[in-house]
Amino acid sequence: MSASFETYQKRRLRSSYISVVISISLVLFMVGILGLLIINTKKGSDILKEKITLTIFIKNSAEKDSINALQNQLKKAHFSKSVHFISKKQAAKDLMASTGEDFVEYLGYNPLQNAISLRLKADYVTPAKIDSIATAINKKMFIDDVTYDKPLINLLTKNLTTISLWILIISTVFTFFSVLLINSSIRLSVYAKRFIIKTMQMVGATKGFIRRPFIWRSIKLGFLGAFIANIGLGIVVYYIDKYIPILHILDDKILLGIVLGSIFIFSFLITWLSTFFAAQRFLNLRSNDLFY
Image 1: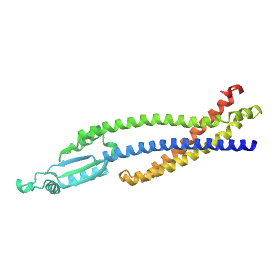
Image 2: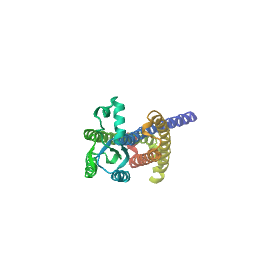
Image 3: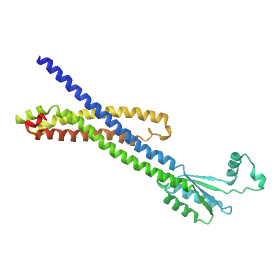
Image 4: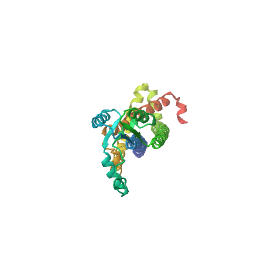
């Protein structure tokens, strides 16, 4: 009879551990997905921003040395992503190819201007910064005009700010509930051994001695859950890179490593703190209160 009861208890204990690991791994997996979403939202917004082009139109009277000097200056500028010179002849060819009409022959001359196509780094694609850069370039005597899609930049900045705000709110709420779920799972596992805790305390064991095995076991279960969560994240990352290659998610190994490492750190902190306070609660209870 006692052997049967002991087997039942062991099976029940294993089921409790398995449920804790599953709960932790699922929650950590979702936290990791959220982390990847935050990183790749930033990366996606940077890709969009860096496609914005400033077109610098150069006067026909401009000297070649002045144009070359401006190109070199822009290439060395901290805000430049790429600089590309477009001659008026090349611009005419591109326009004729797109319209199918030879307007140069019709007009008798080429009305287009030499231009420099400038793409900025993502951090500088804001209405204020682009306006400041365009104004500075426009002050040069041989520059005719600097144009860019101002309404598009305003709309892009506004939408990305709104999306970032919502992601921050969702991240905060989700992290809060994640902590609650993991905390509840660990509290239940400690609750199942509340009588053992009180018995050890009654025979003279110190609180630190009683807490230690509970904390160590919870940390091991947490690491196992984090390992499973990271396997799931690895599979997700593989398929994202396969079907959305523009994000180059596997190229940024440092950020990816930070996300995966953060899962283990988060698991360690929450399991350690949850177990500490759960065990402390039962250590502070009177024996009669253990039944409620």
